[in-house]
Length: 137
Image (cartoon, rainbow, N blue to C red; front, side, top):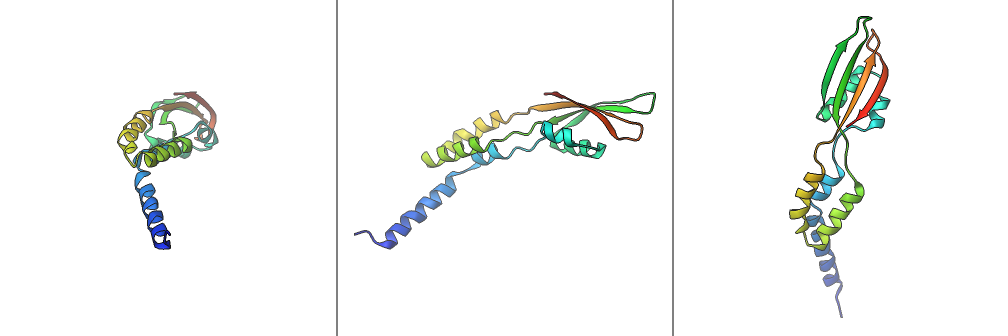
C-alpha cells in the first residue's frame, strides 16, 4: 500500500523537476522587447517616437524643411516573442529533464536575432506629427 508521505514526496520531486527544467530558452522565447507597428501608429508626439528608441533604435535621418516642418526616419527593434514557442520550450525541457535548455537557448538566440521596423514621421512647425509612414524592416 502506498503511503501519503510517498505520494507527497513524488509530487514534490516532480514539481521541483518541472521548476528546474523550464529554463532560459522558454523565458527568452516569451520576452523580447521591441516595438510593433500598432504601437508606432498610436504615437501622437515626438517624445513617444523618441521613447521607442530605447528598444535598440536610432534616428536614420533628421531633415528640416523650409516651411519649418521637419521629418525624421527611425529604425527600432521589432518586438518578437511567442507564448506558444515558450510553452513548447518548457515542454521539451521537462521531457528531456533539462537537457533541452542546452540546445534550446542557442536556437532561441538565433531565432531572436535583430529585426527592425523603419518608419518616417513628418512633423509640423510646432513639432506635432502630421504623417507617419511605416516602411517595415
